[in-house]
Length: 340
Image 1: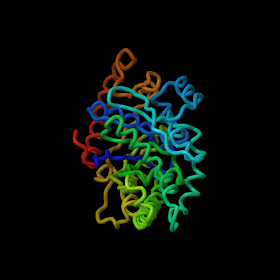
Image 2: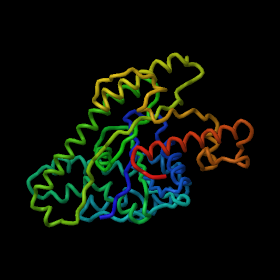
Image 3: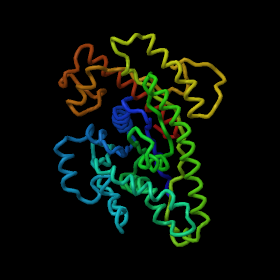
């Protein structure tokens, strides 16, 4: 059995924390560090797909509805009597590939919800387990096709059935945060939910292992549902001119304690400020106009050139961004055992 690439999901049930931009830039950075990257857009809003692909191409893919061209069209046969379709990947650049998202994916939520209780039955378990692990199955087919080193996954900001099935397919979780009340509240919900999903999936794996059907499906693999949180990334996008720095610091410095109690289920032994917290993988600076410049030129901000308008102070900021994202990518790699 070949060793499978780590699945890393970026998740917070509070939106607006720069999650998709973070994944987009890390995908490009890992690719530039000579890692083969599979980016997977499992958010029905498809923002990651919009970041990678031109709108005309997205419209063509969605209108053609060809089997395997989006995550939904890989899974669509499961809504009838069919099986998973192998994904058709979009090559973004050397070493970087995308499974495009699809607004129709939201229609898969009901099927996932109905199969969750069925997977704890005494018989006829193969189909519910196949459906619940479908995201993982598709990701593994794609990863095998390109010999991926790492899989980066974007999901929506909610605690629904789609995200539950994505998280059971996940080895590692990074939590993007803003320094605000709403991110803290999201953390308090997130930690217990992840622990619950992990425990409930383990019960389903044990139930499957004890079933007679397992013998009939000897080659059928299932994700372990590790969901190991390896840290958080704090965005500075929330610092506005009309918002005092003191107010930002007030919320930022509460993150370490809430992260430990809610996510790690620990009683904090030490008091950390967010800037000194070893669980904080990075504080992503607000690159202001570089973000829109990158979007306009459809490239990560650390690849902007003078021809794109990155001159003077912008050129210095581009180099700063490159250093920041490379440092973050290397830190993540060390946490998940990925050699760079």
